[in-house]
Length: 117
Length: 117
Image (tube, rainbow over all chains, first blue to last red; front, side):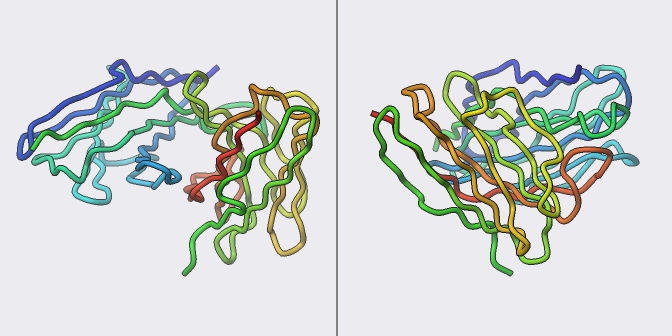
């Protein structure tokens, strides 16, 4: 079965500093990985995804994520944090080699990112 | 292009009642998935519809049901509401099926906040 873990419930970063939100995954085959962000009283907004190819994926709002197969990780990063980046971030995974029709997107529990002015 | 829309945005019901939530996908998208988001359980997959057919279903009781119309709009119904059904219900649409081996991205609506008293 596929799974995804976000080991930190809360991450605090000073404005202007680099930020990292961690995500590790477990799949049987090759992973298909997403990051989504959720602002208060809003749905999830797509940030970026990894399917195959370059391990560094660039996404919306200056975010990027690095796929590391040996460490089964897909950490979200941004070089310089903004106060407006404060939100709830979700990592999600789908196993690309699975019983057809059974696989679905599995979400992590979310990490609340707070950028301190 | 308009995003995913969900109606109503907020709903208050009492135990034992039934409720119907509506989701209109992005124009041209044929897949609609439903998720339940709660503080304790996080994001949990309910079901997916593609071309009016249910493709996949999560581990929810039969009180939770859905359907999709020929214009791809989807409705989700919960009968005999329980206090534990209080949650944010999110709808997501994609061009191709969200389950299976598709690499397509799901785009989420703002959600319907259901409170059961």
